Image: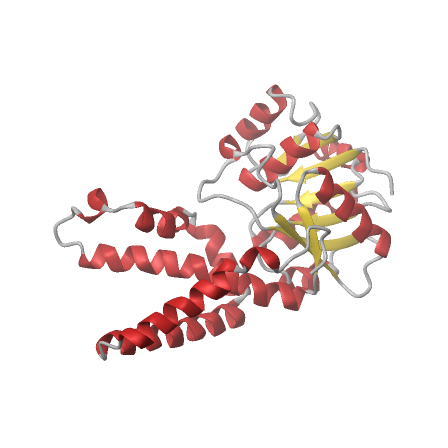
Length: 298
């Protein structure tokens, strides 16, 4: 499938970075957002086309520009993805491919098929890259460089749609990996959602114990690295945690078990047990970059 025009809906840090990356790769980018200021900024920088439009516009004539798009990326919070696809559906051309960048996949993949126009394929997507910051102002073209980019096609998804998206992912410097929505949500709960839960809880634990108000002034690199993502926007994470509730709760239970094991070792002043726990983590952590092949295979 030949791709010349890509539409990006939601020009935040993920959508804005995708728009910049596709523009740098030589594609035309149609921007769609709910904020006129963001659209104006992206257009003035030449990142998106002049006929980019506000999705909340009452004048639907501007929506006809979407007919040019070969691929449409929905870069909104998880629970907004299906409503956005439904809003845009009358203007999506037959043969186009719709994808998303949401952090959970089962709910999206199972629900979006109810609102997709006939002849339009959907491939779930999740770039494993980002920042604690939000907004177009923090977007950059190299955000996805060398990062995993998960694609979660349904059983009925045409192979051509998947291959087209894989090619686009490679074009922006990311590494595509194919898995089922179920596999994705289990994986994401472990390596994305649980770390957010832990970082947020750690900051709140320090906040509770910091009676002097001086702790953060003295915090070193370890604390800052561990808690960086605790600054992420709450609204996005509400959607993620509630649409992946079962997998996140499972990982919290596993984490509590591991934390309890370490707590008991400390309580028992057992140096051998503490050493064993740390070395077990170190051994697994040191092999983390060998789990995925650079050719996109899982």
